[in-house]
Amino acid sequence: MTAGELTTAAPGEVAVARAFAAPPAQWRLLLRKPAFLIGAAVLLFWVICAIFGHLIAPFDPLAQQLLNKNTAPSGAHLFGTDTLGRDVLSRLIAGARDILLIAPLATLLGAVCGTAIGLLMGYFGGVIDVVLGRVVEAVLALPVVIVAFLFIVAVGPSSLTLIIVVGFIFTPLIARTVRTAVLVESQLDYLASARLLGERPAYIMFAEILPNVLPVIVVEFTVRLGYAIFAVATLSFLGFGVQQPTPDWGGDIAANYGLLGAGYWWETLFPALAIASLVMALNLVTDSIEQVISS
Amino acid sequence: MTRYLLRRIGLAIVTLWILSLIVFFAGQILPGDPGRTVLGPFAAESAVRAYDHQLGVDRPLIVQYLGWIGGLLHGNMGSSYTYRSPVEPFIVSAIGNSSKLALLALIIIIPLGIAGGVLAAIYAGRWIDRLISLTGLAASTVPEFVSGIVLIIVLGIGLKLLPITAATSSGASIPDQLDHLILPVIPLVFVLFGYIARMARAGTVEALDSDYVRTATLKGLRRGVVIRRHVLRNALLPTITVIATQTGYLIGGLVVVENLFNYQGIGLLILNAATHKDFPMLEAGVLIIGVVYMVATLIADVLYTVLNPRLRVGVTG
Image: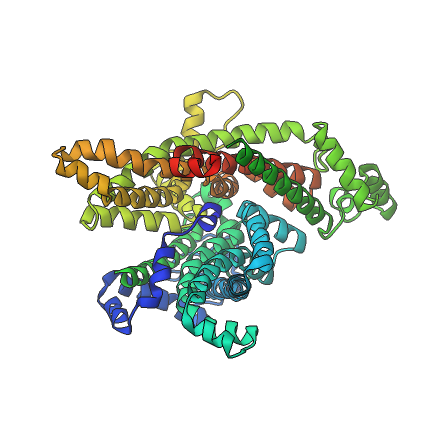
């Protein structure tokens, strides 16, 4: 997984800080970027598969045809069949659902918790900032894979565990970014006047500061989403995610890669390409957004 | 400097102690007990209890923790539940194997990543920059097992160029071992390339933009000399220190790659220990990884302070 990438400041953070300044007109520039359009199209394709997958799929992704095991791609089964005679294409289409549900939910969990902690740290400062800062540092001081590993081993693998683990890992990172953004806001006059008016801290934090740091959080969310898909796919491959027989790209690769030596390449190649296309598409979109913001 | 170093080492030790607590108690709340796991579902209840007693897992948690920590401090890492023998030989050989893989990856990636990043920065905004940046972005966002699978299929099965497992028989010659390690190393290199190239590019762009480079150019130095003497020196020191912080990622990458290529390293060891509920093996493996990670980040921090004169003055003064 991506311990280093997660713990070190992402290059995007500079762009994140500038997200404030982006006027709506700049967003229209996105539509003229081929990288953005290609990424968005691929993303849209997988989202449609995730929502309507079970209707589009030519076969039932769970149906086993034991007389048709490990058959190579053909007219009947475009991407072949796997060890249990299940249609690879159908499992590919249906498998989009879990990863596209788990990764955004995990990122959302991290964003919500991280935003709350970051707001508290940035707004109150002092003891709260120091104590929470130490906790954040302690979490970041452990290799990410170890944190994920221990958690999953202790609690047992499931979709919910995946969401909580990845969300937990993202929380300190997002908290750090939000804290910085809140500190910038704290210098501004509107906060001083809100305090003088005698507004309650909770009101100031969530009704006054939060809307102003929202662009930072949104950009941070899109960047983290890419890492989340990386992490979720990897943990599924290691057997810590969605369990068989539910169609899942990482899980299907784990179930079938032992047979690569026998030459059954289609059972793993197509799920691998699906994961690759999804993460690349997402990063093309994120990268284009960052470029537009920082230009 | 000494005070800073002592403080950092102190913090690292505290973090390690917290890790040992987390590791130990995460192991203890694992569902299922080791006696049942080792003896199987059909063993008699009394046999399971006797086995648990023999392992000592029926004692109070705090007694078990103190016993475990005491043993560790005397160099005794405990005994594997699965193999029923001390875990040290397994850990030592796994660390050795993983080091080979990690070292090979670093030897390839450091020059490659730096060259890519510097080249992209020098041609910033042109097609070479765009090509390197996009390749880096694409390569570093694809999980290792995905690129690994594609490599196995294309290079191992399609073209039959390379062996598809990393395991070699004991006593294999070094060229033979290398042959088996090439395929597993490539996914690690892919992910690291994007990151290191990005850091090197950012550092070089900043240096190219600086006043001292403008002065050097204006006093009539040739472009090549300016880049070699002024830009690279300033751009690469931070990049090199950043590489040390990548160990955390590398460890995660090892778990995946060793699993995919069936390579007996520390990653595969803890993965198997976790699946078989072999607590002593898991605990020892995770702690060793923790130590390696702490030492690496410590070296990175110290290097960064030593190499950056501005920080060094701030610390001693």
